[in-house]
Length: 129
Length: 360
Image (cartoon, rainbow over all chains, first blue to last red; front, side):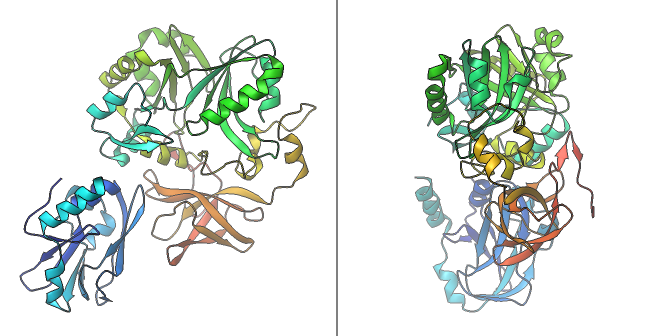
Protein backbone atom coordinates (compact mmCIF):
# COMPACT_ATOMS: atom_id res chain seq x y z
CA UNK A 1 0.00 0.00 0.00
CA UNK A 2 1.52 3.27 -1.11
CA UNK A 3 1.74 6.12 1.43
CA UNK A 4 3.78 9.13 0.22
CA UNK A 5 5.67 10.98 2.96
CA UNK A 6 5.18 14.42 1.41
CA UNK A 7 1.39 14.33 1.84
CA UNK A 8 -0.77 14.85 4.90
CA UNK A 9 -3.73 12.67 5.82
CA UNK A 10 -7.01 12.49 7.74
CA UNK A 11 -8.40 9.69 9.85
CA UNK A 12 -11.26 9.51 7.33
CA UNK A 13 -8.79 8.49 4.58
CA UNK A 14 -8.39 11.69 2.58
CA UNK A 15 -4.93 12.81 1.51
CA UNK A 16 -3.94 16.49 1.38
CA UNK A 17 -1.24 18.10 -0.72
CA UNK A 18 -0.25 21.70 0.04
CA UNK A 19 0.31 23.43 -3.31
CA UNK A 20 2.88 26.18 -3.94
CA UNK A 21 0.11 28.81 -4.06
CA UNK A 22 -1.06 27.82 -0.57
CA UNK A 23 -4.23 26.02 -1.73
CA UNK A 24 -4.62 22.35 -0.91
CA UNK A 25 -5.52 19.43 -3.17
CA UNK A 26 -7.68 16.65 -1.66
CA UNK A 27 -8.07 13.05 -2.74
CA UNK A 28 -8.59 9.60 -1.25
CA UNK A 29 -5.79 7.33 -0.12
CA UNK A 30 -4.58 4.13 -1.73
CA UNK A 31 -5.88 2.27 1.32
CA UNK A 32 -9.34 3.81 0.87
CA UNK A 33 -9.62 3.05 -2.82
CA UNK A 34 -8.47 -0.51 -2.24
CA UNK A 35 -11.06 -1.01 0.48
CA UNK A 36 -13.88 0.47 -1.60
CA UNK A 37 -13.13 -1.35 -4.85
CA UNK A 38 -13.77 -0.17 -8.42
CA UNK A 39 -15.08 3.40 -8.47
CA UNK A 40 -18.11 4.05 -10.64
CA UNK A 41 -19.33 7.55 -9.70
CA UNK A 42 -17.93 10.69 -8.12
CA UNK A 43 -19.77 13.78 -6.92
CA UNK A 44 -17.51 16.77 -6.29
CA UNK A 45 -18.48 20.15 -4.75
CA UNK A 46 -18.83 23.11 -7.10
CA UNK A 47 -16.22 25.86 -7.28
CA UNK A 48 -17.10 28.65 -4.88
CA UNK A 49 -18.69 26.44 -2.25
CA UNK A 50 -17.47 27.03 1.25
CA UNK A 51 -16.91 24.01 3.49
CA UNK A 52 -16.25 23.51 7.18
CA UNK A 53 -13.59 21.22 8.57
CA UNK A 54 -14.82 17.59 8.71
CA UNK A 55 -17.96 18.48 6.76
CA UNK A 56 -19.01 15.88 4.18
CA UNK A 57 -18.67 17.63 0.85
CA UNK A 58 -18.11 14.99 -1.82
CA UNK A 59 -19.21 11.42 -2.50
CA UNK A 60 -17.43 8.52 -4.13
CA UNK A 61 -19.43 5.47 -5.12
CA UNK A 62 -17.73 2.16 -5.81
CA UNK A 63 -19.23 -1.10 -6.99
CA UNK A 64 -19.59 -1.85 -3.30
CA UNK A 65 -20.87 1.26 -1.54
CA UNK A 66 -21.17 5.03 -1.34
CA UNK A 67 -18.67 6.90 0.83
CA UNK A 68 -18.66 10.48 2.01
CA UNK A 69 -15.53 12.53 1.54
CA UNK A 70 -14.85 15.07 4.29
CA UNK A 71 -13.19 18.47 4.05
CA UNK A 72 -9.81 18.13 5.81
CA UNK A 73 -9.89 21.82 6.81
CA UNK A 74 -12.32 24.72 6.39
CA UNK A 75 -12.08 26.65 3.15
CA UNK A 76 -13.52 27.53 -0.24
CA UNK A 77 -13.52 25.24 -3.26
CA UNK A 78 -11.34 26.85 -5.94
CA UNK A 79 -11.08 23.92 -8.38
CA UNK A 80 -12.69 20.55 -9.06
CA UNK A 81 -11.29 17.70 -11.09
CA UNK A 82 -13.91 17.27 -13.84
CA UNK A 83 -11.95 14.41 -15.38
CA UNK A 84 -13.05 12.13 -12.53
CA UNK A 85 -16.71 12.45 -13.50
CA UNK A 86 -16.12 10.58 -16.75
CA UNK A 87 -13.22 8.49 -15.45
CA UNK A 88 -13.82 7.63 -11.77
CA UNK A 89 -11.47 4.66 -12.15
CA UNK A 90 -8.56 7.13 -11.92
CA UNK A 91 -9.19 7.10 -8.17
CA UNK A 92 -8.26 3.40 -8.25
CA UNK A 93 -5.48 3.58 -10.78
CA UNK A 94 -3.55 6.64 -9.55
CA UNK A 95 -5.02 7.62 -6.17
CA UNK A 96 -2.40 10.26 -5.36
CA UNK A 97 -2.61 11.95 -8.76
CA UNK A 98 -6.42 11.87 -8.83
CA UNK A 99 -7.15 14.94 -6.71
CA UNK A 100 -10.88 15.60 -6.32
CA UNK A 101 -11.01 19.27 -5.38
CA UNK A 102 -8.78 22.13 -4.25
CA UNK A 103 -9.49 24.40 -1.31
CA UNK A 104 -8.41 27.91 -0.44
CA UNK A 105 -7.75 27.40 3.25
CA UNK A 106 -9.48 29.64 5.79
CA UNK A 107 -7.02 29.10 8.62
CA UNK A 108 -3.63 27.63 7.71
CA UNK A 109 -3.16 26.61 11.35
CA UNK A 110 -5.75 23.85 10.80
CA UNK A 111 -3.23 22.18 8.46
CA UNK A 112 -1.03 21.45 11.48
CA UNK A 113 -3.73 19.12 12.82
CA UNK A 114 -3.56 16.83 9.78
CA UNK A 115 -1.84 13.48 10.13
CA UNK A 116 1.62 12.63 8.87
CA UNK A 117 2.13 9.48 6.80
CA UNK A 118 3.39 7.71 9.91
CA UNK A 119 0.38 8.76 12.01
CA UNK A 120 -1.99 7.73 9.21
CA UNK A 121 -0.29 4.34 9.00
CA UNK A 122 -1.30 3.84 12.65
CA UNK A 123 -4.92 4.63 11.76
CA UNK A 124 -4.82 1.96 9.06
CA UNK A 125 -3.19 -0.55 11.39
CA UNK A 126 -5.84 -0.01 14.05
CA UNK A 127 -8.64 -0.48 11.47
CA UNK A 128 -7.16 -3.75 10.35
CA UNK A 129 -7.39 -5.20 13.85
CA UNK B 1 -15.02 -18.89 9.02
CA UNK B 2 -15.73 -21.86 6.80
CA UNK B 3 -13.59 -22.34 3.71
CA UNK B 4 -14.18 -24.08 0.41
CA UNK B 5 -11.78 -26.52 -1.22
CA UNK B 6 -10.57 -23.65 -3.42
CA UNK B 7 -9.40 -21.28 -0.69
CA UNK B 8 -5.72 -21.71 -1.59
CA UNK B 9 -6.43 -21.05 -5.27
CA UNK B 10 -8.22 -17.82 -4.30
CA UNK B 11 -5.31 -16.70 -2.12
CA UNK B 12 -2.79 -17.46 -4.85
CA UNK B 13 -4.86 -15.42 -7.31
CA UNK B 14 -4.77 -12.42 -4.95
CA UNK B 15 -8.44 -12.54 -3.99
CA UNK B 16 -9.88 -10.03 -1.57
CA UNK B 17 -11.58 -12.43 0.81
CA UNK B 18 -14.73 -11.50 2.73
CA UNK B 19 -17.19 -13.14 5.09
CA UNK B 20 -20.25 -14.25 3.15
CA UNK B 21 -22.84 -16.14 5.24
CA UNK B 22 -20.03 -17.46 7.44
CA UNK B 23 -17.83 -18.50 4.50
CA UNK B 24 -14.49 -16.94 3.60
CA UNK B 25 -15.16 -16.15 -0.07
CA UNK B 26 -13.50 -14.09 -2.83
CA UNK B 27 -15.14 -10.68 -3.36
CA UNK B 28 -12.87 -9.97 -6.33
CA UNK B 29 -9.39 -10.75 -7.59
CA UNK B 30 -8.36 -7.17 -8.39
CA UNK B 31 -11.12 -5.61 -10.45
CA UNK B 32 -14.77 -6.51 -10.07
CA UNK B 33 -15.61 -4.57 -13.25
CA UNK B 34 -13.13 -6.54 -15.36
CA UNK B 35 -14.44 -9.81 -13.96
CA UNK B 36 -17.98 -8.75 -14.85
CA UNK B 37 -17.00 -7.88 -18.44
CA UNK B 38 -15.02 -11.11 -18.77
CA UNK B 39 -18.16 -13.12 -18.05
CA UNK B 40 -20.34 -11.08 -20.44
CA UNK B 41 -17.76 -11.23 -23.23
CA UNK B 42 -15.86 -14.50 -22.83
CA UNK B 43 -15.88 -16.82 -19.82
CA UNK B 44 -15.33 -16.58 -16.08
CA UNK B 45 -15.45 -19.07 -13.22
CA UNK B 46 -16.95 -18.73 -9.77
CA UNK B 47 -16.39 -20.85 -6.70
CA UNK B 48 -19.91 -21.34 -5.37
CA UNK B 49 -19.10 -24.26 -3.11
CA UNK B 50 -20.65 -22.38 -0.20
CA UNK B 51 -24.01 -23.34 -1.69
CA UNK B 52 -25.18 -26.74 -0.51
CA UNK B 53 -26.21 -29.76 -2.55
CA UNK B 54 -28.83 -31.86 -0.76
CA UNK B 55 -29.72 -35.29 -2.12
CA UNK B 56 -33.14 -36.79 -1.48
CA UNK B 57 -33.78 -40.48 -1.94
CA UNK B 58 -36.94 -42.48 -1.37
CA UNK B 59 -40.01 -43.89 -3.05
CA UNK B 60 -42.01 -40.91 -1.85
CA UNK B 61 -39.40 -38.26 -2.72
CA UNK B 62 -41.62 -36.92 -5.52
CA UNK B 63 -44.61 -36.67 -3.21
CA UNK B 64 -42.51 -34.92 -0.59
CA UNK B 65 -41.13 -32.33 -3.01
CA UNK B 66 -44.55 -31.73 -4.57
CA UNK B 67 -45.68 -30.78 -1.06
CA UNK B 68 -42.55 -28.82 -0.10
CA UNK B 69 -41.91 -26.72 -3.20
CA UNK B 70 -44.05 -24.01 -4.79
CA UNK B 71 -43.08 -25.20 -8.26
CA UNK B 72 -44.18 -28.69 -9.25
CA UNK B 73 -41.47 -31.34 -9.60
CA UNK B 74 -43.98 -33.47 -11.53
CA UNK B 75 -42.89 -31.28 -14.49
CA UNK B 76 -39.52 -33.07 -14.33
CA UNK B 77 -39.97 -36.12 -16.54
CA UNK B 78 -36.48 -36.99 -17.72
CA UNK B 79 -33.54 -37.60 -15.38
CA UNK B 80 -31.25 -34.57 -15.54
CA UNK B 81 -34.03 -32.03 -15.98
CA UNK B 82 -34.16 -29.17 -13.52
CA UNK B 83 -36.59 -26.66 -12.07
CA UNK B 84 -36.19 -23.37 -10.21
CA UNK B 85 -38.47 -23.11 -7.20
CA UNK B 86 -39.15 -21.35 -3.95
CA UNK B 87 -39.66 -23.27 -0.74
CA UNK B 88 -42.34 -21.50 1.30
CA UNK B 89 -43.46 -21.36 4.89
CA UNK B 90 -47.15 -21.88 5.69
CA UNK B 91 -47.71 -18.11 5.41
CA UNK B 92 -46.43 -18.11 1.82
CA UNK B 93 -43.12 -16.43 2.77
CA UNK B 94 -39.99 -17.54 0.96
CA UNK B 95 -37.80 -19.83 3.10
CA UNK B 96 -35.33 -20.22 0.25
CA UNK B 97 -35.02 -20.37 -3.50
CA UNK B 98 -33.32 -23.37 -5.04
CA UNK B 99 -32.80 -25.51 -8.10
CA UNK B 100 -34.08 -29.07 -7.99
CA UNK B 101 -32.69 -31.72 -10.33
CA UNK B 102 -34.32 -35.06 -11.06
CA UNK B 103 -31.51 -37.63 -10.78
CA UNK B 104 -33.56 -40.79 -11.32
CA UNK B 105 -36.65 -42.53 -10.00
CA UNK B 106 -37.14 -41.35 -6.42
CA UNK B 107 -33.85 -39.43 -6.47
CA UNK B 108 -33.48 -35.65 -6.49
CA UNK B 109 -30.75 -33.11 -5.85
CA UNK B 110 -31.49 -29.66 -4.46
CA UNK B 111 -28.94 -26.86 -4.50
CA UNK B 112 -29.73 -24.30 -1.80
CA UNK B 113 -28.27 -21.00 -0.62
CA UNK B 114 -25.34 -20.91 1.82
CA UNK B 115 -27.02 -18.58 4.30
CA UNK B 116 -30.12 -20.74 4.60
CA UNK B 117 -28.50 -24.18 4.23
CA UNK B 118 -28.71 -25.21 7.90
CA UNK B 119 -32.31 -24.14 8.41
CA UNK B 120 -33.26 -25.69 5.05
CA UNK B 121 -31.78 -29.01 6.18
CA UNK B 122 -33.70 -28.86 9.45
CA UNK B 123 -36.93 -27.99 7.61
CA UNK B 124 -36.42 -30.70 4.96
CA UNK B 125 -35.60 -33.34 7.57
CA UNK B 126 -38.66 -32.50 9.66
CA UNK B 127 -40.96 -32.56 6.63
CA UNK B 128 -39.36 -35.71 5.21
CA UNK B 129 -40.01 -37.91 8.24
CA UNK B 130 -43.58 -39.04 7.38
CA UNK B 131 -42.44 -39.70 3.80
CA UNK B 132 -39.46 -41.85 4.85
CA UNK B 133 -37.24 -39.93 2.43
CA UNK B 134 -33.50 -39.92 3.12
CA UNK B 135 -31.93 -36.44 3.20
CA UNK B 136 -28.17 -36.27 2.58
CA UNK B 137 -26.22 -33.03 3.02
CA UNK B 138 -23.42 -33.13 0.44
CA UNK B 139 -20.71 -30.97 2.02
CA UNK B 140 -18.25 -33.40 0.39
CA UNK B 141 -18.98 -31.69 -2.93
CA UNK B 142 -17.68 -28.46 -4.46
CA UNK B 143 -19.52 -26.34 -7.03
CA UNK B 144 -17.83 -24.34 -9.78
CA UNK B 145 -19.89 -22.11 -12.09
CA UNK B 146 -18.38 -21.46 -15.53
CA UNK B 147 -20.29 -18.65 -17.20
CA UNK B 148 -20.09 -16.63 -20.39
CA UNK B 149 -20.58 -16.99 -24.15
CA UNK B 150 -17.46 -19.20 -24.38
CA UNK B 151 -17.99 -21.01 -21.08
CA UNK B 152 -19.23 -24.29 -22.53
CA UNK B 153 -16.56 -24.49 -25.23
CA UNK B 154 -13.80 -23.79 -22.70
CA UNK B 155 -15.23 -26.32 -20.27
CA UNK B 156 -15.12 -28.92 -23.03
CA UNK B 157 -11.47 -28.05 -23.68
CA UNK B 158 -10.70 -28.49 -20.00
CA UNK B 159 -12.78 -31.67 -19.62
CA UNK B 160 -12.94 -33.29 -23.09
CA UNK B 161 -14.85 -36.32 -21.81
CA UNK B 162 -17.90 -34.23 -20.85
CA UNK B 163 -18.35 -32.76 -24.31
CA UNK B 164 -20.37 -35.55 -25.93
CA UNK B 165 -22.82 -36.03 -23.02
CA UNK B 166 -23.46 -32.27 -22.60
CA UNK B 167 -23.22 -30.82 -26.09
CA UNK B 168 -26.90 -31.24 -26.96
CA UNK B 169 -28.06 -30.59 -23.42
CA UNK B 170 -30.68 -27.84 -23.14
CA UNK B 171 -30.77 -25.02 -20.63
CA UNK B 172 -31.94 -26.15 -17.18
CA UNK B 173 -30.81 -29.72 -17.54
CA UNK B 174 -27.87 -31.69 -16.25
CA UNK B 175 -25.82 -34.80 -16.90
CA UNK B 176 -23.56 -36.96 -14.75
CA UNK B 177 -20.21 -37.71 -16.34
CA UNK B 178 -17.78 -39.72 -14.22
CA UNK B 179 -17.62 -37.83 -10.91
CA UNK B 180 -18.88 -34.57 -12.47
CA UNK B 181 -22.49 -33.45 -12.30
CA UNK B 182 -22.77 -30.81 -15.03
CA UNK B 183 -25.81 -28.53 -15.20
CA UNK B 184 -26.53 -25.95 -17.86
CA UNK B 185 -27.63 -23.38 -15.31
CA UNK B 186 -26.24 -20.21 -13.80
CA UNK B 187 -26.79 -16.91 -12.05
CA UNK B 188 -25.37 -14.44 -14.56
CA UNK B 189 -27.75 -14.28 -17.52
CA UNK B 190 -25.11 -15.93 -19.69
CA UNK B 191 -24.81 -19.45 -21.02
CA UNK B 192 -22.59 -21.86 -19.13
CA UNK B 193 -22.37 -24.70 -16.68
CA UNK B 194 -22.55 -25.22 -12.97
CA UNK B 195 -20.30 -28.18 -12.17
CA UNK B 196 -20.82 -30.16 -8.98
CA UNK B 197 -17.88 -32.43 -8.17
CA UNK B 198 -16.03 -34.04 -5.28
CA UNK B 199 -14.32 -31.28 -3.28
CA UNK B 200 -11.00 -33.11 -3.65
CA UNK B 201 -11.19 -32.58 -7.44
CA UNK B 202 -12.06 -28.89 -7.35
CA UNK B 203 -8.47 -27.57 -7.48
CA UNK B 204 -7.67 -29.68 -10.53
CA UNK B 205 -10.79 -28.48 -12.37
CA UNK B 206 -10.06 -24.86 -11.43
CA UNK B 207 -6.52 -25.17 -12.85
CA UNK B 208 -7.72 -26.93 -16.00
CA UNK B 209 -10.25 -24.16 -16.65
CA UNK B 210 -7.64 -21.48 -15.95
CA UNK B 211 -5.35 -23.15 -18.50
CA UNK B 212 -8.10 -22.58 -21.10
CA UNK B 213 -8.25 -18.87 -20.30
CA UNK B 214 -11.23 -18.96 -17.94
CA UNK B 215 -10.50 -16.30 -15.34
CA UNK B 216 -11.76 -16.31 -11.77
CA UNK B 217 -14.59 -13.97 -10.83
CA UNK B 218 -15.71 -13.11 -7.32
CA UNK B 219 -18.96 -12.57 -5.49
CA UNK B 220 -18.90 -8.89 -6.44
CA UNK B 221 -19.15 -9.62 -10.16
CA UNK B 222 -21.64 -12.38 -9.42
CA UNK B 223 -23.88 -9.79 -7.78
CA UNK B 224 -23.73 -7.22 -10.60
CA UNK B 225 -24.23 -9.95 -13.22
CA UNK B 226 -27.31 -11.37 -11.52
CA UNK B 227 -28.70 -7.86 -10.96
CA UNK B 228 -28.39 -7.10 -14.69
CA UNK B 229 -30.00 -10.48 -15.38
CA UNK B 230 -32.91 -9.48 -13.12
CA UNK B 231 -32.40 -12.41 -10.76
CA UNK B 232 -33.33 -12.17 -7.11
CA UNK B 233 -30.83 -12.61 -4.29
CA UNK B 234 -32.23 -14.42 -1.26
CA UNK B 235 -32.07 -12.32 1.89
CA UNK B 236 -32.13 -9.14 -0.14
CA UNK B 237 -34.90 -9.26 -2.76
CA UNK B 238 -36.90 -11.85 -0.83
CA UNK B 239 -37.12 -13.50 2.55
CA UNK B 240 -39.74 -15.02 4.80
CA UNK B 241 -41.73 -11.77 4.90
CA UNK B 242 -42.23 -11.77 1.12
CA UNK B 243 -44.24 -14.15 -1.06
CA UNK B 244 -43.03 -15.22 -4.51
CA UNK B 245 -45.92 -13.23 -6.00
CA UNK B 246 -44.45 -10.05 -4.51
CA UNK B 247 -40.90 -10.54 -5.76
CA UNK B 248 -41.33 -11.36 -9.44
CA UNK B 249 -41.45 -15.14 -9.03
CA UNK B 250 -45.12 -15.85 -9.80
CA UNK B 251 -43.91 -17.78 -12.87
CA UNK B 252 -42.22 -20.29 -10.56
CA UNK B 253 -45.37 -21.04 -8.55
CA UNK B 254 -47.58 -23.85 -9.88
CA UNK B 255 -50.81 -22.60 -8.31
CA UNK B 256 -53.29 -24.28 -10.63
CA UNK B 257 -54.62 -27.75 -10.01
CA UNK B 258 -55.36 -29.93 -7.03
CA UNK B 259 -51.82 -30.23 -5.69
CA UNK B 260 -51.43 -29.12 -2.09
CA UNK B 261 -48.14 -27.47 -1.12
CA UNK B 262 -46.92 -25.56 1.90
CA UNK B 263 -47.87 -21.92 1.50
CA UNK B 264 -50.49 -22.47 -1.22
CA UNK B 265 -53.51 -21.54 0.88
CA UNK B 266 -51.86 -18.30 1.96
CA UNK B 267 -50.97 -17.39 -1.63
CA UNK B 268 -54.55 -18.03 -2.80
CA UNK B 269 -56.05 -16.05 0.06
CA UNK B 270 -54.28 -12.72 -0.08
CA UNK B 271 -54.13 -10.56 -3.19
CA UNK B 272 -50.57 -9.19 -3.29
CA UNK B 273 -50.40 -5.44 -2.71
CA UNK B 274 -46.81 -5.05 -3.88
CA UNK B 275 -44.81 -6.36 -6.77
CA UNK B 276 -41.29 -6.34 -8.08
CA UNK B 277 -40.13 -3.92 -10.77
CA UNK B 278 -36.85 -2.89 -12.32
CA UNK B 279 -35.51 0.65 -12.19
CA UNK B 280 -33.09 2.43 -14.50
CA UNK B 281 -31.63 5.60 -13.00
CA UNK B 282 -32.03 8.60 -15.32
CA UNK B 283 -29.95 11.03 -13.24
CA UNK B 284 -26.34 10.58 -12.19
CA UNK B 285 -25.66 8.52 -9.09
CA UNK B 286 -25.97 4.97 -7.84
CA UNK B 287 -29.11 3.24 -6.56
CA UNK B 288 -28.63 1.08 -3.46
CA UNK B 289 -30.71 -1.38 -1.46
CA UNK B 290 -33.17 0.14 1.05
CA UNK B 291 -33.50 3.51 -0.70
CA UNK B 292 -37.06 4.79 -0.77
CA UNK B 293 -38.91 4.82 -4.12
CA UNK B 294 -41.49 7.64 -4.39
CA UNK B 295 -44.38 6.83 -6.74
CA UNK B 296 -47.84 8.32 -7.33
CA UNK B 297 -49.28 5.08 -5.89
CA UNK B 298 -47.25 5.28 -2.68
CA UNK B 299 -43.75 4.52 -1.47
CA UNK B 300 -41.73 1.44 -2.29
CA UNK B 301 -38.22 0.27 -1.56
CA UNK B 302 -35.18 -0.77 -3.53
CA UNK B 303 -34.23 -4.35 -2.66
CA UNK B 304 -31.04 -4.55 -4.77
CA UNK B 305 -29.30 -1.67 -6.46
CA UNK B 306 -25.98 -0.90 -7.97
CA UNK B 307 -23.97 0.12 -10.96
CA UNK B 308 -24.39 -1.86 -14.17
CA UNK B 309 -21.01 -2.31 -15.85
CA UNK B 310 -22.70 -3.43 -19.08
CA UNK B 311 -25.09 -0.47 -19.31
CA UNK B 312 -22.75 2.00 -17.61
CA UNK B 313 -25.56 3.34 -15.45
CA UNK B 314 -27.29 2.45 -12.23
CA UNK B 315 -30.01 -0.21 -11.99
CA UNK B 316 -32.18 -1.59 -9.24
CA UNK B 317 -34.82 -4.11 -8.32
CA UNK B 318 -37.56 -2.64 -6.15
CA UNK B 319 -40.76 -3.64 -4.40
CA UNK B 320 -43.52 -1.07 -4.99
CA UNK B 321 -47.33 -0.82 -4.95
CA UNK B 322 -49.01 -2.93 -7.63
CA UNK B 323 -50.27 0.11 -9.57
CA UNK B 324 -46.71 1.07 -10.55
CA UNK B 325 -45.94 -0.32 -14.01
CA UNK B 326 -43.23 -0.30 -16.65
CA UNK B 327 -42.75 2.96 -18.51
CA UNK B 328 -43.62 5.16 -15.54
CA UNK B 329 -41.16 7.61 -14.07
CA UNK B 330 -40.58 7.57 -10.32
CA UNK B 331 -38.18 9.19 -7.88
CA UNK B 332 -35.67 7.58 -5.55
CA UNK B 333 -34.31 9.15 -2.38
CA UNK B 334 -30.53 8.88 -2.75
CA UNK B 335 -28.95 10.35 0.38
CA UNK B 336 -30.50 13.85 0.45
CA UNK B 337 -31.53 14.06 -3.21
CA UNK B 338 -34.56 12.85 -5.16
CA UNK B 339 -33.29 11.30 -8.40
CA UNK B 340 -35.41 10.31 -11.40
CA UNK B 341 -35.72 6.67 -12.42
CA UNK B 342 -37.71 4.81 -15.07
CA UNK B 343 -39.72 1.70 -14.26
CA UNK B 344 -38.87 -1.28 -16.50
CA UNK B 345 -39.51 -5.01 -16.64
CA UNK B 346 -36.37 -7.01 -15.75
CA UNK B 347 -34.14 -8.58 -17.00
CA UNK B 348 -31.94 -5.68 -18.05
CA UNK B 349 -29.25 -7.76 -19.78
CA UNK B 350 -29.25 -11.32 -21.16
CA UNK B 351 -26.65 -13.14 -23.22
CA UNK B 352 -24.50 -10.05 -23.57
CA UNK B 353 -27.37 -7.95 -24.94
CA UNK B 354 -28.93 -4.93 -23.24
CA UNK B 355 -32.70 -5.51 -23.31
CA UNK B 356 -33.75 -2.12 -22.01
CA UNK B 357 -34.16 0.45 -24.77
CA UNK B 358 -33.42 4.10 -24.18
CA UNK B 359 -36.67 6.05 -23.76
CA UNK B 360 -38.86 2.97 -24.12
